[in-house]
Length: 272
Image 1 (cartoon, helix red, strand yellow):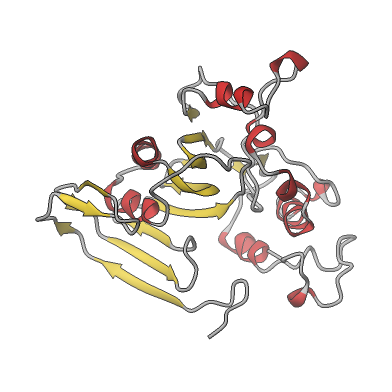
Image 2 (cartoon, helix red, strand yellow):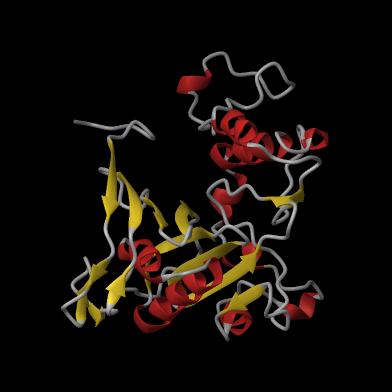
């Protein structure tokens, strides 16, 4: 069966916590890593025929999902990708620990895909982990009372490596960008991860920019029609589950100035 876009068969699994007998975990890439003594119970939403679409929530309330974000990197190699989120869900007791588990695996094996942003959350914190093929990454904590939209490009921008409560990054994240010619500090501009590492085409693609505008505008209507790329926006009022449903159903703000699309379900700019 040929599938297009989000038209996918989805399986829902309830996975029990397991006392592991094996000391080795075999990745889908064939690499081996150390196994933990016990893995946590979790719900697993499996998006069949799509390698990076799965969602997990474990017994601690830690959730993990992701968004493809193409990078400029084309030299590095990596040996972990699909398995990363599953391992985080099996082992993390909170969101920050999930980020640290993912980073440790990336440092050990390198990330296999061009780029991706993982959303790792618990009941108290949300972290976004932007990874680049190879062993480069930046993680940023979402501020309280804020909303973030990730429309298939990196959204982490300026980073403060001294602020260890809100940022984690590979030690050479800036130096490597300078080495590759992606960032020139002599121009007097602060380092911007999105601009340095993000693939330029994804930043201007209508498939992404329209979703960025529609998603942000749903929480702050003053942003309608404005393409802005800050990491997050402050919510103007409490966000409810019904609000999120409306965003996920969005076809570029019907009946607004953005609604110039006559057949939104078939538009190639990808409604949310």
